[in-house]
Amino acid sequence: MWLCCLLSSDKAAVGVQARSTCDSGWTLHENRCFRFFNLTRTWTLAEAYCVTQQGHLASAHSIAEARFVGTLSGNRRRTWIGGVQTLANTWYWTDGTPFDYTNWQAWQPDNHGGNEHCIHTNFVAGGVWNNFPCNQELPFVCVK
Image 1 (cartoon, rainbow, N blue to C red):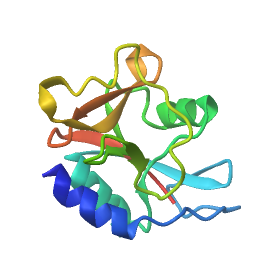
Image 2 (cartoon, one colour; image 1 turned 60 degrees about the vertical axis):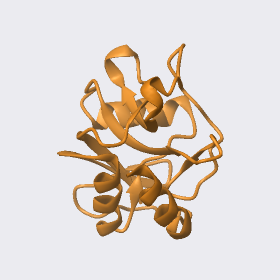
Image 3 (cartoon, helix red, strand yellow; image 1 turned 60 degrees about the horizontal axis):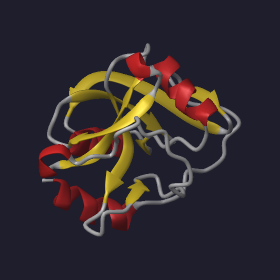
């Protein structure tokens, strides 16, 4: 299932534009608009939902941004963000921004069971990231 999403997302990835205001329901942070959706979706369907909102699953490029995403989600245990693993075992953001910051939990990414190719945040553990099966249904944060 994640292969489908990787192929389509890779072609559709575009950079997120800097903004000074956000649409209703979205929150401005460092020139980007973020929104938490308390809807449980697989990673693929969460990304598709973000695209319908003219965005993508959120990327994080600093500890401040990662913490901001945590605040938006109410510090839930698991929340999808836009990191996904390619077949070449590299990670990228679906919004097209550089994968220039990581916040992996100490023993992550581990690809437990050979099917953990998507990133969720774990705010109970301080906002660290875990790779997780993409078919699990979690709430998510979008960015645009």
